[in-house]
Amino acid sequence: MVSLVLPRKIIYNADSLEELLNLSRGYGLKNILIITDKVIRSTDYFKKIEEGLAKNGINVRLYYDISPEPNIETVNNIYEFVKGENIDLIVAIGGGSVIDVSKVLRVKLLRPDLKSEDISPFVSLNLENKFPLLVTIPTTAGTGSDASFAFVLKIKENNYEIKYASGNYDLVPYESILDINFLKTLPKKQLIITAIDGLANDIEGIVSINSNPLSEGIAIQSARMFFKYLPKVVENKDDEESLNYLHLAATLSGIAFSNSGVGLVHAIAHPLGSLFNIPHGMAVAIVMPYVINFNYKDKNAGKMYDEIKIALEQLDGFEIKKNLTEHLLDLYNKIGQPKKLSEIAIDEKTYKSSIDKIADLALRDPDLAFNPISPTIDEIKDILNKIY
Ligand SMILES: [Fe+2]
Image (tube, rainbow, N blue to C red):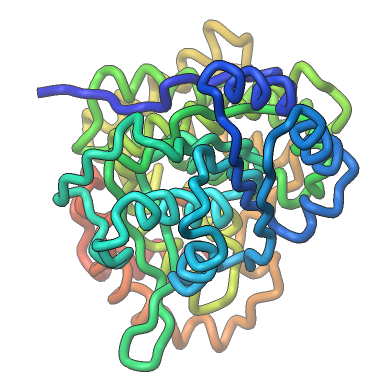
C-alpha cells in the first residue's frame, strides 16, 4: 500500500490575516487561540494580524511564552490557560517548536484522557476535521513541521530532560499559510540553516527505504527549489519571488519526509547537535555531504541522488558535476555555509574524545532504520572523523 498524508490546504504567497478571516467566515469561527513566541509577537506584522482579527469580531486568546526547545509542561500550561473556553481554531505562528507544541495541545484539548507522551503512530486518535482545527503560519523555511505528522518535545526521564520525538497522522495541520512577511524578519544565518535542514529532509527522504513514488516526486521538486532559490535569497533578502519558492520548498520537504522518513544524516546530527549544542540545521549541513558519499555505494540510492543532480543540470541549467555531493558543496560556497566542525569553533580534543559516544548514540537513533545502508560503528566513526 502506498499513501501520502498532507495538509488539506497549502496556500503560498499568502496574506495571513485575509486567509484567517476567510477561514473564520467559512466555518463561523469565533474563538481563536494564537500560539507564538516573544520575538514574533513583538513584530508589527503580528500586531496587524491580531488587531485585524479583533476588528472583525473574533475573540483572540494569545499564548507566547514558548522557548526554543519547549517541553511537555508548556503544552500543559497552555491547556490550563484555555481549557473550557471553546477554542475553535488554533493558529500556530512560528518555527518548529511553536508548531509542535500546537499539534500536541490540539490533541490534549480533544483527548484530555490521553497523556501527551502516549501519542504515537500506533494509537488511533480520530481527530480529523474536529474542532479546534489547527492552522499553521510557519516563520522559518525548513522545519516542514507545518506539513508533517511529527513533533519533538522535551520530556523528563529519570531527572534528565530528553528530546521525545513522535507523531501521528491526525497531527498533520489542517492548513498551512505561507506568508513571507514573517520570513523576512528571520536573520540570514537562521534562514540558511533551517533551509539546509529542509533540503536534508528531501535528500534523505528520496533514498529512505520507506519512500514511495509520491514522496520522491515531492522531495525532488522541493530540493530543486532549495538549490535554486536559497542562494538568491541569501544574496537579496527582499527577493520576494525567491522567498515564496523557498517557503514552499520547506513545506513540500515536510510532506516528503514525514511520508518517507529520514536517515543517517539525522541519526548522526541528533547526538552531535545535543552534545555540542550545535543548532540542528548546522549539524545536519556538516554531516550531509559525507553521508551522501557513503550512501552512493548503494545502487538505488545513487540513482535517486542522480535524479536530483540530473534535474538540476538538465532542467535548471546548473553546471555539470560529478555527483550530487559536488552540487551540495557548491551550494555551501554560494551561501557561506561552513563545511567542517573546525570552522564553527568546536574544540578538537573534546570532539575527538566524544566520537565513540556520538557513534554509539547514532547507531541507536530510530532514524537510522530508514537509511539505505546499515552502517557499522566503524563506518559511522569514519564519517565523524572526516567532518572535523
Ligand atoms: Fe531535520
